[in-house]
Image 1 (cartoon, rainbow, N blue to C red):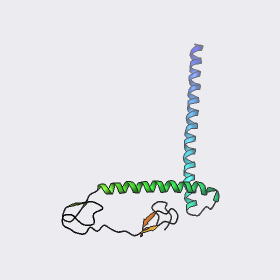
Image 2 (cartoon, helix red, strand yellow):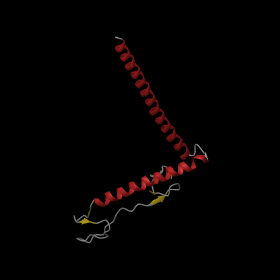
Image 3 (cartoon, rainbow, N blue to C red):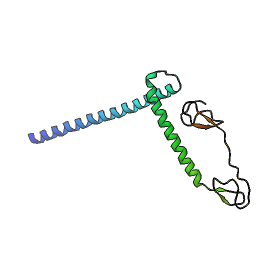
Image 4 (tube, rainbow, N blue to C red):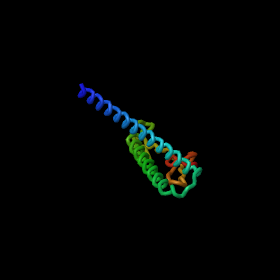
Amino acid sequence: MQNIIDKFSKNKTQNEKYNINMEIENAQIKKANLLLDIGIMTYEKIRNNIIIDDSFNNICDEILEIDKLIYNNNLKLKKMEDNLNELVCECGSILKSENKFCGTCGKKIELEDTSLIKCTRCDSLNEEDSVYCSCCGIKL
C-alpha cells in the first residue's frame, strides 16, 4: 500500500513541476512579446523624432538597411511579375516591355511615365504624389 502512495505522491510532484514549468514558459513568451511590442513602439518614436537618443543610432541604421533590402527585393519581385504579364497593343498583338512601337500595326507604345522623388532618409524612389516613403515610412 505504501508503494502505491509513494507512486501517487511522485506523480503529483511531477504534475506540479510540469505545471510550474508551463507557467514559466508562458510567462517567458508573454515577456518576449511585450519586449517586442515596446521595441516596436520605441523604434517608431525614434523614427518620428519623439525620442532623441544617439545610443539607438547604430541599431536604427541597421533596421533601416534591412527595411531597404526588403523594400528593394519586393520591387524586384514586382518587376519580375510585371515582366511576366504581357502587354497587348490595341490591335491585339503581344508586345515586349522594351518595344517602342507595335511590330504589327506600327502604333507607338506609350507606357505610363511616373515622376519619382527620392526619400531623404533611405534614398528610395517614390511616386511624386506620395505623402510617405513606401520603404521607410518617413513623411516626404
